[in-house]
Length: 504
Image (cartoon, rainbow, N blue to C red; front, side, top):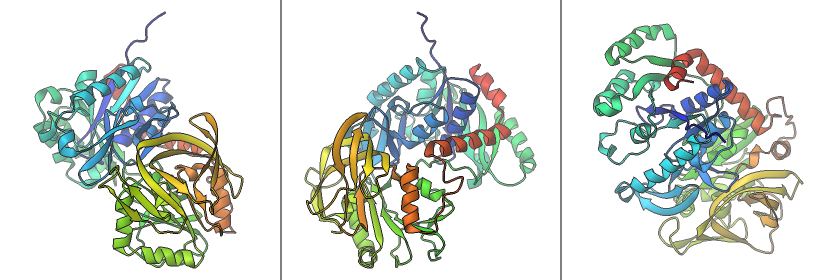
């Protein structure tokens, strides 16, 4: 039996946060997959509240899920062995190989990362023994000199894997010459030697106007510009950490009468906002994210999303003046939905006796559903299937929550669950009010279910009629977008030079 030769690695690092590293890796994963290469993504440590659950019941960052999908493989927690989920301004929950291990503040986390680096190296080795190419993503800026002795995501992992580095910069934010030349100037020579070229992301306008800029960079750095990637708005890829820029936040305009108008209350600790991506992508839906209290009349549905710190977001709702508009909307017959943390907030008391999310204590929820939640140390992580009780639609989703919610006998469940992590079960999930106008569930990914989504939108907007685009399943839609992404990058990137870097 021949042994699999360890995969080659390519590292995509950045001049800063949000310069497009995740998208570059996703594009490269699809491009190499199109070439017939067995390719997988890897990020030693990610920080995000936008996560997902694998088929094995492990939690990992959304960006690596997207990259795995682009590579046409199943996501696995080895692709993101360490995940930090911020629960406050300075503290995070640490997820290792898909499972939470402790909560920590930033100062204590950075005191010693050696053990986490060792665990991430084990994950990388397993991937290298399974695939032919690993495309690794860095975190933030790879030139943070104050963190170099503690940062294992960027050059430390690239050195371990003997991976050539592509440095990614964002020209849309300005200062691209300082981004690239400055990064090379502050990193040590051993790291500088790994950098083999640059990708300049989010260029607007006529590319020929930047020819002089490319010549200048190549002369000053003695390295090639491997791609000048034009800014795009027509490709829809799930965002990693923030609500997409094109989404309307606190818009001045009122809901539109010929659309299904849906509002999402944007909590400070919002998590898994990609739950709403299928709604964003439907031209017959007008989706607004709201942070400032306003009259909700005119919206067909108001949603409370997931939260990484439920009691903190509940306190924010009260302090910011949201309680009265939400309760008035409910009293006037508006439809309210809650997902995960939003479901808990719709209920009565929320208890955290052990300080799982923050300081120990209890807070009173909105009281719109007769239920009570207690935070517990054990985290529920599962891929789940069930039937939406009110319509009979089969729904698939995933659960990520610390709380256990007790539904009072007066309430009906919203979902009859039939499977969790591949095991047949018969359990109830969520709750729905007697008038069917207020409901909550622990299912993330609910709107990915085409049949359920269409029936919901038809109820909200009687004139709603699915078109060719909205009839696509979520997997069909995603693959269409990954193909568009790969085509876009292929046109503006030197794929041949990148292949030569890894000899593939």
